[in-house]
Length: 268
Image: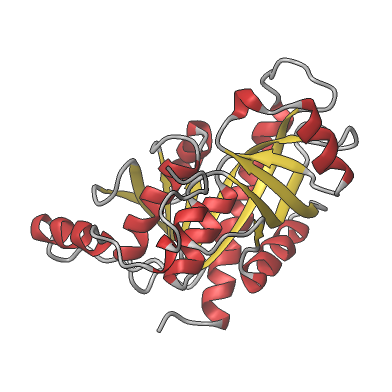
C-alpha cells in the first residue's frame, strides 16, 4: 500500500467519475431557470448570526439549489447588483468544497469565504480581521485537486478588493498566511510554534480547500477571518461582541469586493 497522499499518484490530473454538472442538471430539472451566472459572486458563511444579519439587511429570496441555505441578496443602491450568500452547510474543508462545487456548476465565478480563525500570534486580539493571502495545505481536499505542494494563494485581484473595502469601512486588516487544517483538536504546540515563527497568522479549516477548488475550476476566491481564539495563549473560546461586529463588517466588505471585482472583470 502506498504511503503517499493521495494514495493514487497524479490523481489531480485525471478526470473524475462524478461531475458537479450533474448536480446543476438535477436542480434545473426541478427549477428550469436555476442559474447563478451573471451575479457578482457568492459569500460562504459559517456562523448563523452572520447569515441572519445578511438576510435582514437586504431584500432576499431563498434558492433551494445547493446544500445548505442559499439566498440571493438584492443590494439596493448598488445598481441592482446581486450577490449570493450561503451558510448552514457545515464546517471544514470537505463541506466548503462540496457546496462551492455546486455553486460553480450553477454559474458562480467569484467567492469569498468569511469565517473565524484562531491566532498563532499573541498580538492578534479577538475580533481582529485577517485577510488570507496564502494558505498552508494541511487538509486533505486540496491534494485531490492540485499537484503536491505546501501552500496555495487566492485570487490576487479579489483579495486586493477585499482588503480595500475593509479599509473603506475604517478597518485596518492584517494580511498574511493561514494554516488550514482538518483536525482542530490535533493542533500541536510544535506546529503552532513552527508556523508562527514562519509568519503564519492564523489557523482555519477551509481556506486552502476553497482556493484549490477555485483554481481547479478557474474562478476567483478570497478569504477573511475574524480572530476568535488563540493557539498561543490558550483559553476557552468565549462569545465576544468584537467577533460578531467584525464578522458583520467582513460580510459587508466581501459583498462590496465581489461587486467591485465583477465591474472590473465581468463574467464571460
